[in-house]
Every structure is written in structure tokens, then in C-alpha cells.
Image 1: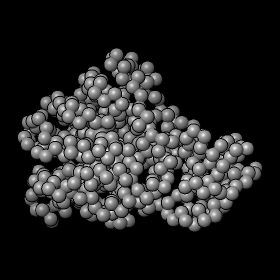
Image 2: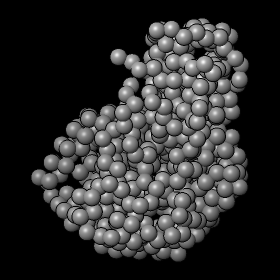
Image 3: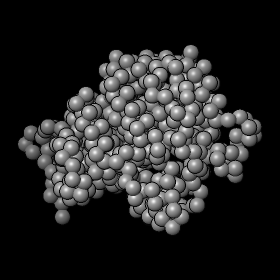
Image 4: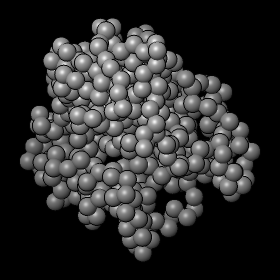
Length: 504
């Protein structure tokens, strides 16, 4: 695994785009730097909790990446994401539509909002925040409005197509207060690219998605919402989805407004601004071109990686991890199973194992990223399902012991490889320490990339000294009981005052 960073162009240095957009606001934005609090975090919590979490059903056959790679003409109609329930319902032969007919008959999707709001009587935002903080997460991002257009705060911006399509209780504000009270930062997700109360056309493919970006009054409506979220909640993260319905100059002004209110704020990479050329996506020949390109990209990326807009702070690959260290800040965003929203159809085998979850976090940290791990509460009782609670507890247990090897670390000269014995290893670093994560190691391991110095110290992450010896093969470490005690979590070593060996 190479330490060499990817060749992605850093936003501050992309002079071609600056010329193309010809806007000094964009140039000013590019001077913004991702704050240390975000780079240090390593773990955040995403929360998808909408009216769709009441019916809470989606097929569990595929993750989103393989589905998009399939080239199916109705891939998104079979989405594993329950938060796309209303869209999938528009395809009569989809698994969701069949399920809905069997369970709910002709009941409209909008009626689930009343059930969702009634369940708020059982909601305890402080209990959620305490559980999230216990995992070691440094920030929580809440979906404030998903593609169905339902707002989780008592917005003063009236939806002209569905008045009152918002929660009367200030869910966003209550969770923000609880999260900050638990010592974490709070962020807002907002679906700027889709709103099915403005454009309800069925979305079967990526090309359909581009065509469904609403026009007319929607760009002003979306901007008013985001400005309201900034004014009311001062989110540390402004996390948009799909695209942005306004052209670049209006978006740059919105970003400048945000950074004036939240100087150490962060915006993600799903803010591709509207361009009149996108209107051509509603033409059949153009749709075919877009869809062919999106399938090629999904195969190339082995999953869903958003296209880079002219400005952003962090990249957000979805259900996929970059293969190496990036030159740009990034976070892997995904659920514990195949959906973000709660899916009552999910089976235990659809979820992370304990080993997979802990190794994922180590792998991402070694490559300089963060993990934004989703929690999908139930809609009928506002509770986090037990299989998700169990995985949060796994993180709590592992992070309590391994936090020092993750939080506020950076990639080492080599993010990872395998030991001489064939054991996967990942590295992070901070100051004079290198931390090694070993997956299911034997009693003795040899780290080929590590060389000793006269002051080298090797110990487990809890401070237990370990015997070691240096050789031409690398640093050989006797793990002893540490290997036997590890269980499914990686063994974590702290290597003080070591050198990187030059490998042929």
C-alpha cells in the first residue's frame, strides 16, 4: 500500500476552474482550510430518521455500489436505502411497491409523517447524544431534510406544494443542544439536489436523478432553508446531497455567509452547482450518455464517489474506502447495514461484524480519513434498533482502549501492508509515535517497514512493554498474551522512536 497521495487536484490550487468561473468569491473561498477539529476526529455519527423510517423497508440483495455498477435500467428503483422509499414506491413492480401494497394497501407516503411525529413522545435526545459520545465520535450530522422534502424543524419557509410538511417540534434544535452538551460538534445534512414535493418524477437511474433536480421556485426555497439552518443552529458541518439547484455565484455567496457565521465550519463535496447544460439531462439521448458514464465511473471507483464541484472542504465516498492516502481531506460515509435509514428487512448477516467495523475504522484512519457512521432509528418509537446499539457498544469498548492510536493522528509514511507472516497491518502516527493495527496476529510478528533506533520502545496501546528485536527483515515483536487477548478487534501497538526502513 503506497504512501504516495492520490493525484486529486487540491481546490486551492485549481486555477483553471477559477478562470472558468471568473468569480473572486470562489478565489476567496479557496483560501479556507479544513479545521483541525475535523481532521482530528476520525469518527462521526450520521443520523437518518425521516417519515420513511416508519414503513422502513428496502430490498437487501445488494449494496449501493454493485447495484450502480450493474447498469440496470431501474437500479435506483431497487435501492437498498429505505430513505428512498417514496421514490421506489413509484415503480409498481419494485420490491417496495409490492411490499407497500401487501402491508399498507393504498396508504399515501405522506401519511407516515403523523406516525413519525407521534413517536417523538418517546424520543430522548440526551440519551442519543450520550450513546454517540461514548463511541468516541467527535461530531454528529443529522438529516434535517431528505429527498422527500420533510423538514425536521419548524421552518418558517413555507413549502408551496405541501404546506405544513415539517415537524412542529424542533428536532434539529433539540439534538443540536444535546450533542453539544455531550462535548461533540453538530452538523446539518440537507438534500439540496432533490425534493420530491417539487419534482416527483420517478428516478430509476443516475440520469433520471440529474433530470429531477427541481427548477422554478425551488432554488430560492432551498437557499432560504439553508440560511435558516445556519441562523438557527450554527452547524459545524454543512452537508449537502446530490447537487445544488442554484448557479455558482449564488452558491459562493451562500458559502461566504456560512463561513462568516461559522469560521471553523466544514462543507462536503456534494454541492455541484446548477448549470443550464444540466437541463439537457431531460432529453433521452443525453440521458443515455449520462447513464453509460455513471456506470463506468461506478465500476472504476468500486462504489459511489461524488464528482468534485468547484469548491468543497472534504470528499465523501459512499460505501467505499479510498485505496490509499488522499491529498484532500475525506470521510467514508455508510450505514451499519446496507441502508442509511432503518430497514426492518435487514438480517444480522447484512450488518458489520465486530472485526469488520473496528478494522474499517483503522483502515480509514491510516489513510487520513474519517468514518461518518450512520445510525438509523426506528420511526414508530424513536428508538435505535438493538443491532445498531450493539455496534455502537463495540466501538465504545474498542475506542476506550485504542483512542490514542486514532484521534488526532495522521497517516504515517506507509499507511499499511502485511507483516512478514502475512498479517494485515495499518499505521497511524502522531509526534514521535507510530501506531500499528494488526488483524488477528500470531504470537510473533515482523513489521517490514519499521526500523529501530537507540531509544526505541515497543508496547501495547495500554502501555504493556513488549520484547522486540531488529533484523534485516524488519522489527520482530513478541506479542505474547496480547495476541491471545485481542479477540475480534485489531491488536494495537505503540512504537516510540522508530524509523521507517527503505524497502526495495
